[in-house]
Image (cartoon, rainbow, N blue to C red; front, top):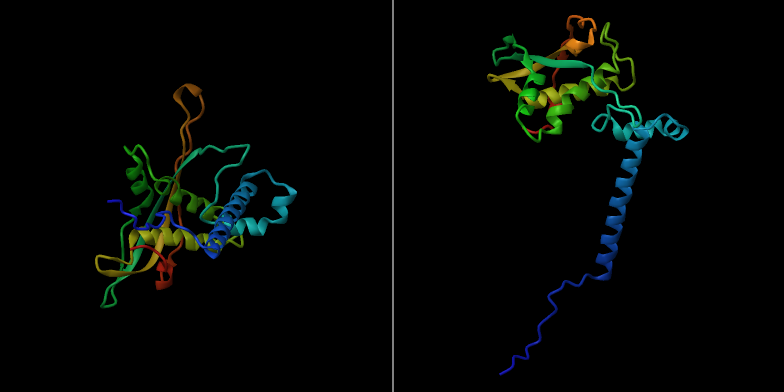
Length: 220
């Protein structure tokens, strides 16, 4: 006996309003992606009238998370090894303050990269680029901002470190943080005959206060 029961088409039929919404959403995603790529292109391309005219808008999209450390037609290889350490001050429930030992943030990243066939972009570049951003917006003599983005650079560097250190140390609340940067020139190969590089330079930043707002949006 033949089953004549009517079966509906298993393929989903989208209504006209649903197709319109999906089309608009797809168009918005494509347009947004195109604008983002255009902003990054203008950021890395040689200076031109368009990039100068829209500099503020481009900087607003790129900085600080998407900053590039290269130029489109003139890559600049790293010639220095930069090591960033941090230390914190904590306060106990009884009010006692403790200055903690230095924490090797760069050393942790290097340890995560070594032996990893596909190291994370975060481990390779996040901390280094955050320091480059800070260094490019501050006077190394007194650590005062030399650029309108100086405050943003400080917050960016601080929040990256706090993400890794956490809110407390051995049960005591973190109240201040300080950074130490050691810069060593990459030595030339032995066959080059060039002079040995100078001794590494150490730069210590002042203590920065840590508030609850500095942890806003951080994981952990």
